[in-house]
Length: 95
Length: 474
Image (cartoon, rainbow over all chains, first blue to last red; front, side):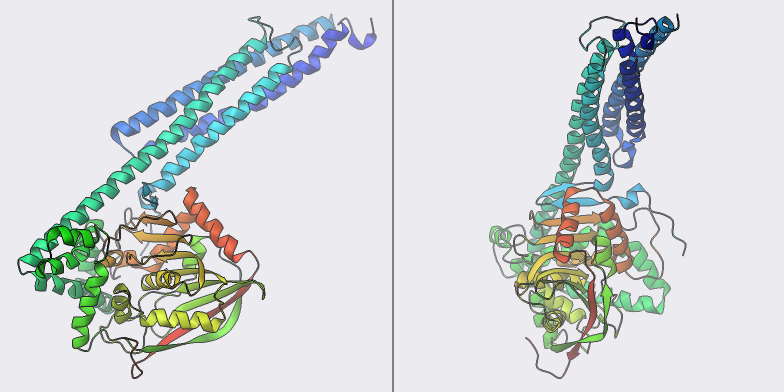
């Protein structure tokens, strides 16, 4: 085996940069979605409507915030999965 | 007096375009803009999540619970749902605001119709004289208020603060002015259906202009409201100036109504071969019913409302010709109060190639601006002067009407006659208009920028003067 890959196969060694690229992009995307979520939370319908229309609008915005949180949860989970893969590969390399 | 910043209510604009009215647009549209932005972001995020999935070393389709490809697939689906829901909510928000505006417009149409019926019945029952006396009396009262405010009397301040800066009073004044011609028709024995068909609620053959003509005929018998010839001349040297970039700049450059000062500003942009022009016209200076030397007076107000060429109109036309504005040179014309009415009349005359008209606090009028001319009409709902033209009920895809209650969130200042009509208040509203994301307002700004360009030009002030002893134009 080539020293360049330690005990990892060439295929496994190529996985590390790809996983790191994935994780980096996910981190950036998660940051942007968090910003958008904060902006949606700040929307205040009381500035122009009241009563039932206001509640209905607020409800729809809350649903969107909830959906965005769901997306964020998926992205965080994906980051953790990728991080575990990176750790496994690095541990194998260290051995 | 210390001024507190306006609240959201005080910043609320109502924008109408071609029969569609949107309420509280600056706030509603800002929120709709955020939702639209979320919609486009969600589409972009979907693409990026897909790209990240493709980077998976084991391939994007590995259906393993421990594989991020599967999790990212769920995120991709959720983002698709978000794209749809944010777009739907933005569209619903705009539609709801439009429906609210439509209800308000319908209410105004019905109110005008009802006031026409009442006016007609009042005329039939011999109350014409009383009603007709209210029109000139109201105008006289406004003149008195403007004059008396200079004396700083407590009574003028109190009446002005309590009555004349009140949206309900403005609506009533609008309905009253609109119904005066119906009262005349009733007194002359015109059947109600015919009156309604010919009047403001019908084809508009009769209306406020008919009332103004009647007022002129009566007043001129007594030597009042008589037009004279006018002449206009430049004042001072030309100044280098950069083109206006929006409603704020346009309003800021309108000359203030000050006795003895220039009433018109003319700016020249472009090149010698392809010039373009901006013309700014101030409001009423003299509220006396007898014309003296000031063309921006009560006589010109009533004459313009009657659809005739007022002294102020003649002074503007002379100034524009003398400044060198050619028949085909594109022009942006702007006015406050009477200046707005004159600006509309200049555009309607089609003597010059007016491309855009902006009026601030002008009495509503049925003056037909040619199709294709971008028109921005700005009215404060607590400015009674805008009601002196009645309810125009004009709808045009080229005309954008912006309404705002100037004193919705701040107290009416004491010692100022008709504060909601003041040019400074309209300048504040113009700044809010520039901050609005509303598409039709953006389009108007683009039209102005397209006509005047971005290169510096020259500005010259003009002053018109009546020649009381000269031949009358009437």
